[in-house]
Length: 287
Image 1 (cartoon, one colour):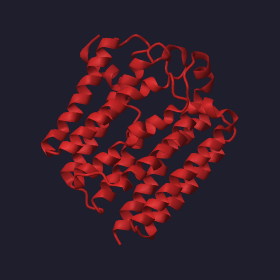
Image 2 (cartoon, helix red, strand yellow):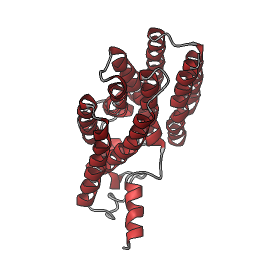
Image 3 (cartoon, helix red, strand yellow):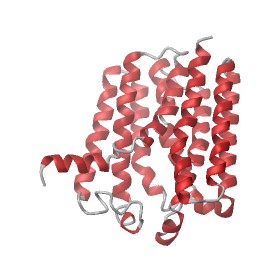
């Protein structure tokens, strides 16, 4: 195998060909970068976070495939992934994940922010440990929400060098959002996950899966509305929440019959949910 083919396999292993994960990781981080800087994020910090989240999402995907290397060959949607198909060795995957994580940590060093570095180590642990939670947590999507939202306290640490209580409430909102969108994702693979013994919220919620998704969306929007009130955000923020609520309602129409293809479409469509909230935050700061 030549080096171009090898790089192509690594690209697929890091899911660079499927950017939805980067976007779902980026939106809560961008929310926090704008809120923690009153709408004027430091350009250097913004670039460090942008590069860091791509690196950490890529590392997380590699670790996820390493953790699921014995399960993925039995799932139709994942059996052709490089590690599951035997095209990349477990050792290669671990070395790649380690290199990506190290690069992400090195990005932070020039900022000379000890709290940010400490939080980055925690974020790396969360990203590395999440894939293994599917073996014992009834709702591993909640853990995913912490891992995908840990850019929130990091953004506050980067801009103001401490993490106020509002950042943790913002992280809580992201946890419920992750439960919503990743349950939609888990509904796609529910039959296969039941066969191989992986735990997901779609299995835990059972016949209340659609209800669980919509409740999670409602809590997310409720927490964000409360945060907006605490921070005295202006009407465009609430307009963004209203648009996000409309998007969540559209997702209900997609998932209510539990058709796997439509559930996956709802999952992908969460990019617009996160983007609507971010647009509301940005527009609010214009006032």
